[in-house]
Every structure is written in C-alpha cells, then in structure tokens.
Length: 119
Image 1: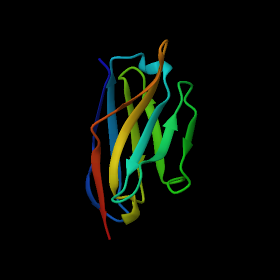
Image 2 (image 1 turned 90 degrees about the horizontal axis):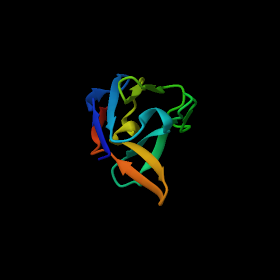
Image 3 (image 1 turned 90 degrees about the vertical axis):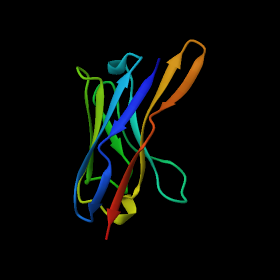
C-alpha cells in the first residue's frame, strides 16, 4: 500500500524558514523521483521541486535560491527546506510520486500540509 505522509507545515512570518518532511512507504523509494507540489488559494497546483533517484534536483523559478529539496533513502523520506519565505509561498504543500507500473503510470499524493506566511 503506497503511502505519503507530509509534516512540518505551520504559520511563520515573512523571512522565516520551515522544513517539510514526507515519509514514504509501499514502494521502492530509492528508485523513484520524488516531487513537491503546492496549491495556493484559488490557484492550480504547481510543481515546486523534484529530486531524482540519482540526486539531481530542479526547482520552480519562483523558489530557486530559497528552497532546497533533499532525500534520505535510508529513512524513505524526502525534505523541502524553505528559507526566506514570502507571503506568496502560502499554500498547501503536497508530496508526490509517479510510479511506473507494468499497467501504466499512476500518481500518488500525500494529504498535504498547510504553510502560511504572514506579512
């Protein structure tokens, strides 16, 4: 049973930092790219960052230089370190994995964790 559980969200002031965690189970974590998405109020969900099985990373332009994605394969956990937070970072943040099975691809999502940045 695939499961993704996010934690670490909360309320912070502009300029502050938060570290999100996503604990994964039910698949071979080390072989899969892991993604962080976010959904701001009234907006579509957008890809924030991803990290490949080899450790390669990529970021949305809006967070580049402020956010860092990392993974600990021994703990089956992916992290998102968020620094210099801005009010526009306010959103529900979701952990995601797209698993490629013999029958096709399938997306799995965590429950989301709320990040609120006050001005």
